[in-house]
Image (tube, rainbow, N blue to C red):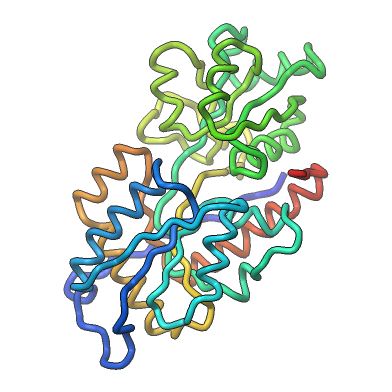
Length: 322
């Protein structure tokens, strides 16, 4: 199988360092902007708003959150890639950032050459679950059911090309599980079809699925990561069966590649200070996000490694999103 990259965490700097004034002439004397490549709403938006409020206090100037959704998050990220490299335009990226290069032709920017990582800010678990009426209670039983019902198993995700879609395809390549992908435009309709067992399996963020697990409408099979998630420790991790299997949703911050390293490092320190804040940690836990706060270098290495991983998966599975 294709092993995942680890995401090393950065030791949080002291707040005193994070609040130090920026060197004269080195910090933009114009509005700071955080470009979000998704529509408002959901965990990404919540994280953006938390960053906005706390960074504005550190910088003593506003941080404007701007939404530029579309083209699988490429519109917003392309805007960041082509912005002046002066530290004033920051981009939030999600898992599609490392998946798009493997799936999409004619991308308007080069993920590695045109952008530099500031930090991998947070991650969250994905859950593989089944309809409550399915005669399946574990991954082993799901595999046995697949073998006994060849060509009849299907799995739902909130979209083609999403981390949930690629996680399902990696699972198929790794385990031999036979199930067809059924993409939806968002999770809402997918849940209804899985509840009625019109589609047998669902892959969606753990936090989004848990209320339906509690209500008995879904049966959890495994989180698709190397270790169990603290918010649902009784649910098995896929890594317990397949060593090295680790797929999570991520959030990160990027800037134009030519941004001076001094500014990148100072931005990293400020984001790390925010992610250490007790209020922020508590709020992120409430929406199923775990702070990471990586260094710029480890985030860049992670992006490179994940791009290679998904390119291999897409090629091996002959995956397209057309």
